[in-house]
Picture (tube, helix red, strand yellow):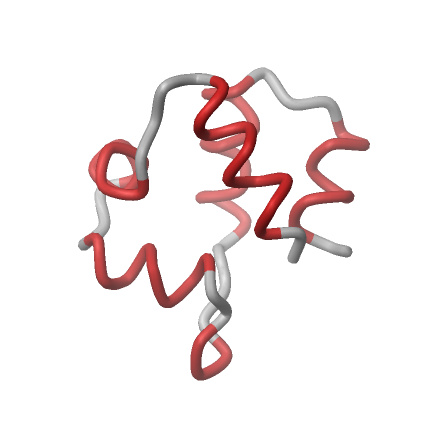
Amino acid sequence: MNKNKFESIMKLHGDTGTSLANYLGMARRTFSLKINETDGAEFTQGEIFAIKEKYNLTPEDVVSIFFN
């Protein structure tokens, strides 16, 4: 996961970890585990799709952020 690119897109849209966690319907701690890939935590396909839609990401963006 390219955490720096993901965080830069979040900031570009005025989001924080807390606001995006709320949007995704998860606890801030869960979001933190996933963005830092702690203990094997990762975003689900549904969460990635929701993020893609929220930020209007291209398929290439999604690959470069989540599958890098």
